[in-house]
Image (cartoon, rainbow, N blue to C red; front, side, top):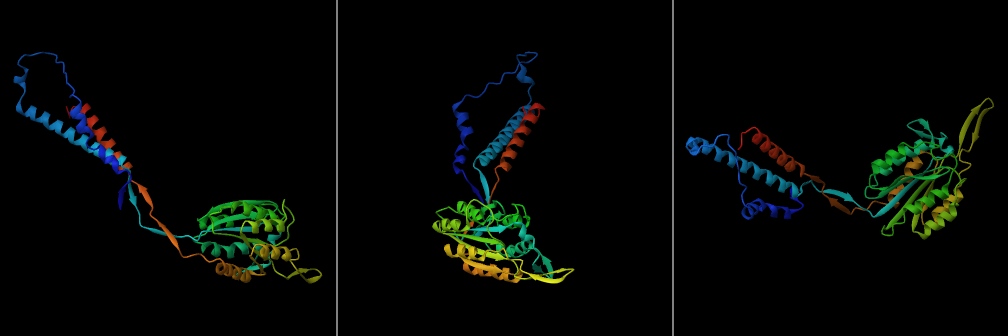
Length: 329
């Protein structure tokens, strides 16, 4: 439907009429090359009728142009159909480790070995798409922690930037404490009912300005709930000239600290040894932090003022052109 934002603009419609009443009509003076006392005798009835007709057409065109200007000034808008937006009142940040150890290929996707970051992207994609109603943000951390995506309802952009992330982009080391500290800074809105951080890493804190435990204590004071995910297989086989050797690729994973972080903030620690377990963890998180069903609606608004404004300018230009060519006098 069409609505007019400034209906009071239609009060100016009779303005030309009042101007005509209050101001005297302009006197038209035409200097002739030859003055003849009986010049009126040369005027025919058809000429007089044509002059009157031309003036009427000018008046009609001018009134149409004025009406179009008033329409443009009233700000006409097209209101689209109602669009429902689920809103949960929750801020949720994903913190993903991009340190060098994330390049270990101990995960499998469709019978193909992939590194830990690729598996994280693969599983997190569906989780992000389901977060309708949450304001979602993305933190990438290695030696340093960076806010890649500020809190937004645009889950598509969050997923796109996660998929574009690369190992080593934030440095080769791991600053878990700084990632939590950055999340605290970005989740300080007192009006939000719930603040959640999901932190995924495959190692221990080896860099940063603040320790993970101290950061967790600050998070608990701010009411920030942290779910931690330790990622990496427990066992891999390496083949060499000495034969097959089994080793633990997750020997550097600090599960004790990750568990303490979760407990201090009323969250939970999860262990993901393969793609299936990682997918199950995100499904559990969906249950622990469900999206509320309440929603708000809005109607998209499209401005239409430029149509009557353009029409008014075209009519005005047409009147000027015809008068210059002698069609209207």
